[in-house]
Length: 259
Image (cartoon, helix red, strand yellow):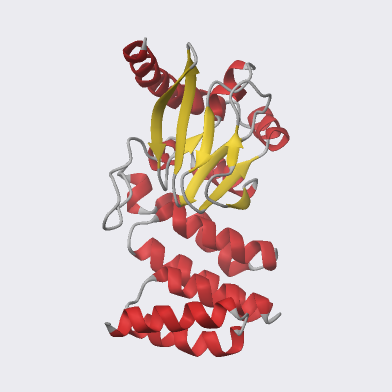
């Protein structure tokens, strides 16, 4: 067994016993072997369990910085949001979050990198962000709420009411609809993808079901926040409409192929 595998296994055993104090040094060893930003996130989570919130905030910011350095803007955004949830007055986290709009991945309208073993996303939220001004981006991200969704949980269900918009920061969700009693898979969305905008833009019930394909972290912009945002920044609706139209074309093609 490799050192990384052995450490990972040992950490899992400690975590299963809620032995957070012992787990943290082992996580530090793991990070020394494999400098994965997610390890810093796990250290932050462990520190939270020990009620060491100031230290947890520092770890989430550190993880966010590492993600940003590697081009994972949405993952970085999620960690800054975690830090701000624990410490809303943290100026460092807020300033760094705002600076993400100038990140090359956003300003250059590039797809985010893809982790080894993952499929290339069919779309990316980065172009969505890049179509917003700095001020619009800041206001949009301020309204986001973090959710941790277990595998198999339905996030939105076809036919139900709901107007929130979601961005995936970790994990994956599958999108499917029902045509003549048959399930039609529409997409497998991954980090940096977004969904939920169709119901908001049209005012109609949800047009598809979205289910967590694995443990997934989401950033949600609730309906009331979105309405307030668009009331102040009408162009945000135009930006969402642009990306919605691109998605509709793909959906129509898949549904036609199923009937």
